[in-house]
Image (cartoon, rainbow, N blue to C red):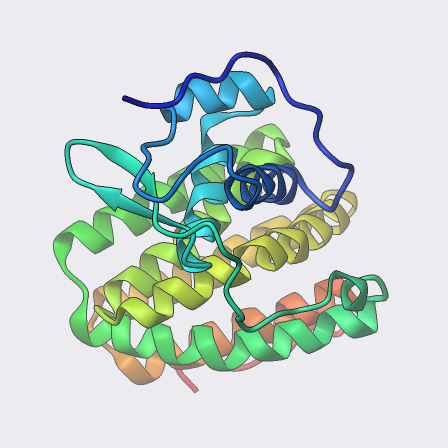
Length: 250
């Protein structure tokens, strides 16, 4: 049986809600609250306990899966794989403070997302396209209503759908790891976009260009559209008005 969660836990003030939940769960697992093989409480129970949404819990659990602490069993739920922290690739949160440092992370995204878009164009399924389309629709709704947080969630969902469409699980795993930083990147970009209304529309147009290239099964156009999007994200993060202007598919 899943271990009951008796009371709400205090969360440390870190970068984001997902960071806080991931850190708290990690401490509980490595501290012995949950033992290897033990099933965690449901998403809803943990969301209530931590005082966050189920989406935040889902993202935190995904991060701990990447870290090798958690796994999933069909019909049972999420369980503890290990109660020991594993050595893994790390990115120092401190590097994300100045916009110039954030651009370094965007450069990392450049390589990952550009090639992922190309592979997705070759390997995507109708199911992948539906997931991308849903994310695009949610982003459009968020831009229209001015709901930045919802738009960021949909944006991350869109990029994850592209990685899933590569049929290479390592893209999805690495993107899950980058998710915490990707969320921060997009939040900064969207908040600046909110001050300049046309920027939200430009970002959405870039997403649509990626989607249309993937839909058309055109790997080179998908790579070019993804590269343009990440380059323009770098400009938005540094509040630079000189956007990268390229012919679509170039």
